[in-house]
Length: 328
View: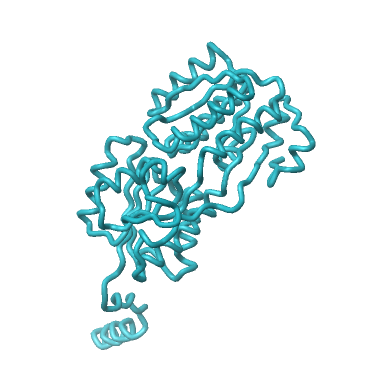
């Protein structure tokens, strides 16, 4: 009897056990490479989360009908060529990346695999594409022209701090796009009679050295130029700046959310979500060289009023009225 009862239990268990997932449908599952300089964090950073949301809205989900091969240089630009080679060896159908520096490494590694830039400043000036309207080659995606924005950021900072005379600049000269913003900032500084102190940031050690210089020679404010590396250090930079009662202007809204005084920039999550459309088009047969590089139509001025109060800075009422977002 016990044997019969055991047999019945086994049969019933087989009948009512959860079904195993169905095997993938026949056909090739698209494989997408994802290469960034900064560390990959969990939960995903705002820009990566927006990109994945954009893919889901278009019907793609990692592990189901696409496979995403993630690679991060963990802040070490020297390993980027090796990671690019890994993705090529993995036979990815396309590669997405953040920033001109990483995109140029990829372009040098392959002229055939499509490359979608989630966000890069001045892709024409850095040689990523021939023109915004007709990129040619295998690169396309989202972009911002850094020159105009670089000058505007210094002007807004001067409007906020009329007595501004000396500004420290965090820059990464290895990022080719940062050079464009640096030139714009220099031109604006000459017109506004402001002295600039460039501080090179290519590693965590450089960041510590820059902090030491700022402590010895305190500037009136600090500008963090747009680069993937500096973006990844935003929390550390903000914490230090607050300890020194130093206002920060940045090209990333996320800097301001993390405590910087203000930012003047496009929405990075918006751009990366839009980049998913490019991925969809390429997977459906479009050539990257035929897809115009898209630029944001709106630039956001974000002001952290909580930080302003902590620093004893009174934001001009006219500037507050122009702000797209005020953090209180």
